[in-house]
Amino acid sequence: MKKVGFFRSIHLKLVLIYVLLLLVAMQIIGAYFVRQLESTLLRNFETSIQERVDLLSYYVGEEMAKERNPEEDGPTLQEDVYNILKDFNNTSDISEVQVIEGTSLRIIGTSDPNNQGIVGQRTTDGLIWKVIATSDEDGDDQTLIHRPSGNRIWKLAEPIKVDDDVIGGILLIADVENVYSQMKTINQIFATGTAISLGISALLVVFLARTITRPITDMRKQAIAMSKGNFSRKVKVYGYDEIGELAMTFNSLTKKLQEAQATTEGEKRKLSSVLSYMTDGVIATDRKGRVILINEPAAKMLDVSRETILSTSIISLLGIEEEYTLEELIETKESIILNYSTATKPYVLRANISVIQKETGFVNGLIAVLHDITEQEKIDMERREFVANVSHELRTPLTTMRSYVEALAEGAWKDEEIAPNFLEVTQNETERMIRLVNALLQLSKLDSKDYQLTTEWVDFVQFYNRIIDRFELAKEQNVRFERKLLDQATFVEIDPDKLTQVLDNIISNALKYSPEGGKITFKMVEEEEMIVISVSDEGVGIPKDNLEKIFERFYRVDKARTRKLGGTGLGLAIAKEMVEAHGGKIWARSVEGKGTTVSFSLPYLQTEEDDWS
Ligand code: ATP
Ligand code: MG
Image 1 (tube, rainbow, N blue to C red):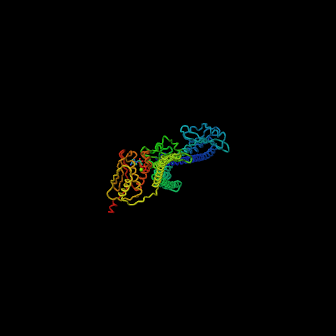
Image 2: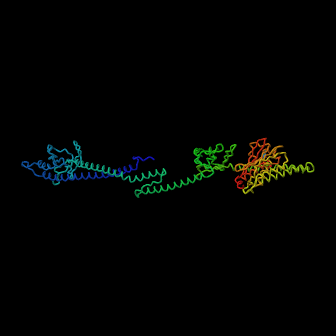
Image 3: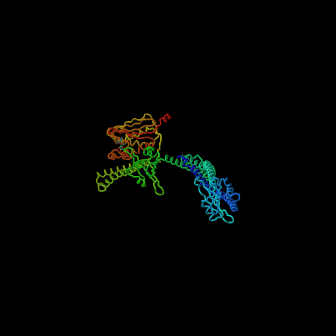
């Protein structure tokens, strides 16, 4: 954050406000004080002059009233008046005093020694004329500007009265400029005083304003630190005023924020660990459908990298641009099936979309939860296929039987040649159905969890030989048997009944598909921790693509032919379950037209034999 410049700071504002207020106060006080002082000084000046004029008028009146004999040698009126006026010449404030005779209006004396020429002349001053003419007791005065010097002068005219008769007048000219220059000096002193006090108080305010601005600056610094995640700082409380209280509130706010932040962090960590440890994929988007969060399982499911996928559209991420727009996605209530299966690998995901919505209905974003349903789909498909297969397998013998029974009922029973034949077919079909149902029952038992083997230790060489013997005795075809078994007794822990069934099926298959004069080889080899038992024939063989599938339920390479041979297509599927229940594996190898080898392995620990020996 930028630092506040000095010219914008509260600091400067406070100083300015204070100085301006002080200035205004000083101005108001100054104006009032100067006016009062000026008027007092002027009044004092005027009264002191007035008093002297009053005294003068009394003395001059005495002299003028005196009887004078022109023949006598005594001083003349002019001389007497001049003697009285002489004293006024020495005062600084009075510049001139003139005495005017009442009737002739002639000047009979002046205090100005340089102006004695005007004595005897008629006065030209209007003010004294007016005072003598109106016999104004209080006299009259006037303030004028003296033309040549520019100084202010004060003229005062007073009548001279003897027994209430006006016999003359006194005209006094005083220099008031002194009073004004005194005022000027006082004003200057006042202005200097104001300037000095303003300067000093401005300096003081600079320091005092710090007490306000420093806590504010501190809080600002703390706010910056807080925005960067540092909650360890504390604002210093300088005093218990409003700013101090603000600082304390600020500190408690910091504490609360820190707690809130810690809670949020904790929640965030919890959420992120929940998200990363859950097996379902989770994708969150903003309101425009752009990915803002994707957990590891989701990234794995969609085979993308978490870093690069952020802020791409969820629609394109899921690859559903053709089926959905964002609006449609928001409105979908059902889950979406995403089929990413390829020809070789099935891969199906289910996405449940939920919308994050405010109470106002405003959509904040989407949450998509992805679930891998490939296995489930596969199981579902197998189940459907199985039911279809079972129904089909049961219907075929039933329809055959129905048509034969119908033919018998319609009269074929009477025919001695056809009837036994028809009945035999019906019997065969019934037996096939029983076999089928038995095989299904067995499979369902193998599927159930509580299925258990009844195992015992058996010498497999002897066990295998006995089964081959049985087939050799019963065989009707011209097929040669060759045995390549182990020389010594080999003990394995097996369920003999179940393995008899496995071998019965494999051998009967080999016999079924062996040509006339063919050879069946029975092998038994010992491998690391395993014995491998195999049955090879020289029959038609199985196409390479179907080798895996012959262990699936109901699978037959050539349906028409095998059905004629009475097979259910369940034999190898049952064998597979049983071998796997023993902890072994079953597989087939074949060259088309040359023959087939079906092998299975059983766990076998050689050390156990050592223990016996
Ligand atoms: P069931 O065993 O119930 O009589 P099945 O023999 O037809 O019926 P499986 O034993 O499960 O059923 O065999 C499945 C299919 O595998 C057979 O239908 C056949 O097409 C093929 N098959 C199995 N063994 C051989 C073999 N030795 N040679 C050629 N094809 C074989
Ligand atoms: Mg079979």
